[in-house]
Image (cartoon, helix red, strand yellow):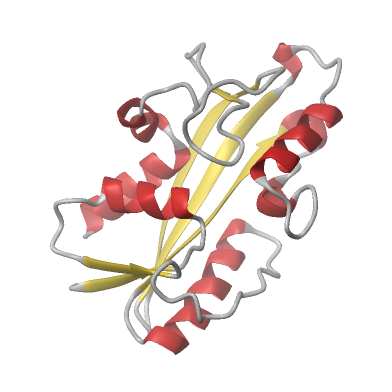
Length: 192
């Protein structure tokens, strides 16, 4: 495989994927290179459905293998919210900060032990005919306030199991080893 199109407009996500797959003889392209590609509506009810919708729509435009990622945060106390709506939890064009603030409001006065959560990542590689899924999960808890400057999304709130630092406080190498996306990317790297 010589070229892969990363079907994401999220620079943080795209950078993580490129960082993790560096050293492979693959030329990466993404929405960041092709801003003219329209937004693809993620209408699926699961991470797998959304990744497939995105991958097939993008493949029809670029005609090279597509790597689609649908990831999200599931909080047990909130019956799995925000789930597939993680990126737009506080509204269609919500910022990471707005999404984090909404989550904190919903968990106000809830003890840390009851803030159990997990990040899930579904990576999908689609070449026009075959589909391959690579999954990763990272268990943890939601902190009571945002901490750290690194990462993106809910990283300043997520305390991975066994750690006292949020994803946003961890160095990139540690985060990539334990994160949901890191686990899925390791499976993809092994496959490639």
